[in-house]
Amino acid sequence: QVQLVESGGGLVQAGGSLRLSCVASGIIFSSNAMHWYRQAPGKQRELVASITNGGSTMYADSAKGRFTISRDNAKNTVYLQMNSLKDEDTAVYYCNTALWGFPYWGQGTQVTVSS
Image (cartoon, rainbow, N blue to C red; front, side, top):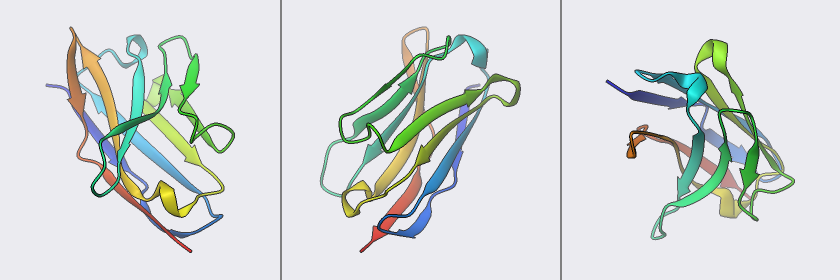
């Protein structure tokens, strides 16, 4: 059974930083690409950052230069370091992966940025 458990969200002032974590189980973690999505109130869920099993990364334009995705295969964990946070980063952040084409999601972690 695939499980993704996010943590690390919270309330932070604009300009501050947070690090999100997602622990995966039920998959061969080192073989899977991992992704972070977010969904703000009234908006569609959007891809924020991805990391391949080889460690290559990609970012949404809104995240470039401020967010860093990384992984620790020994801990089955993917991270999202978020710096210089802005009001518009307020959202629920979700960890995602896929197995045999089927997507799996964590329960999400709330990030709220106050100005």
